[in-house]
Image (tube, rainbow, N blue to C red; front, side, top):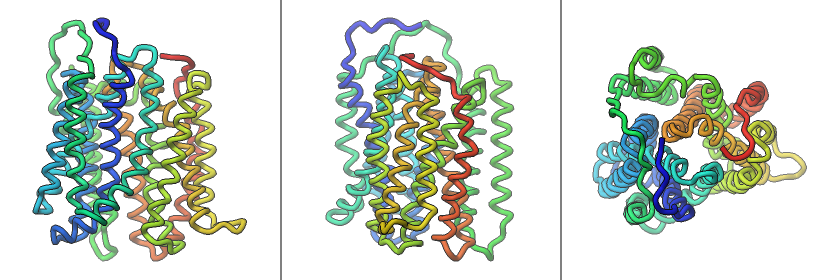
Length: 460
């Protein structure tokens, strides 16, 4: 049970504060990619090691997501939110001052550990304090990430072109300090809950899940970098080890008295299909979008700068259609947006796979196809963000973490598998065209999953 707040909550102010943290994290996930070449030159390292600044961020983010959700439910959303922003800000300062690529990689992992706490704690804060309006405010989270995807590359290009790659990280410091100051002033303390004996942290569960995820991501990363002349058994052995750890994790949480993640939240009735839909409907699309600049360059010869701006089209579409979906969500329910968004997504994949028609230039054709993918994602995201949370609002932080984890798994799996295939092919453009065609067919085949998503109309 929770107590009623003593003073009214300034909803818009609180939303802007937690939204600013999410926007900072969203921008950082794209802005660093623009600075890779500058980081390589500035630290006198190889492009492979420079690329690990992205990989380390993904590792740290995926590993800490469920942990941060658990910490938020144990120690409080507000406390963990403040700690997460502090860690992210300090790690950003360290990244900006790093003079060694290995130090930068480690600090990027630490930065991700802080950023992983933003979504579950921000969601928990809104669920705890926003009352009947919580579904609409949670839905608006879906409009924040497209904004970050749009402006991240622009900021990155500006900093690298006119200042230094270090400013990509320095910019987070004043923003982070401002968020902390405002959160201390305006974000309310967690509601008083019925006192219970604190549960001990499931260290074994954390180790099994973290080790399995880390080994799996490392395996697919090695597969993607593997040359035809190199032995295949090392990454396959690592993949088998990852699978064994994940199996051991599921056995462990079924037997543990206080499991790291309650099994029902992963594969229980209704929860399982929500996680699967998040992974296959949204996670795979995010992964496919990351491949579009490469596709534009390899198939149509579009330069790197213009190919990168293609993602602006999906960001605009995701933002606009996410806001429209939020406005009608209480009347439409969750399933109708899933069907509508899937149909638009399929159309986008089909257009990507086909050559330009009706006199359209390759750039305009790809921009429109990318716009459709963003529109489909924008329609779906508010429904899926609420579909899981309304099942167990008391576990909102963990459910938000599991949703983001599902998206990450779908994204990383898509990118890793496709890049592994590309490494064995001579015509990357044609291979990606077939990939998009396959994804269109796959999306049609999994569309019936929407009928199993728990329906809800009105506020929850």
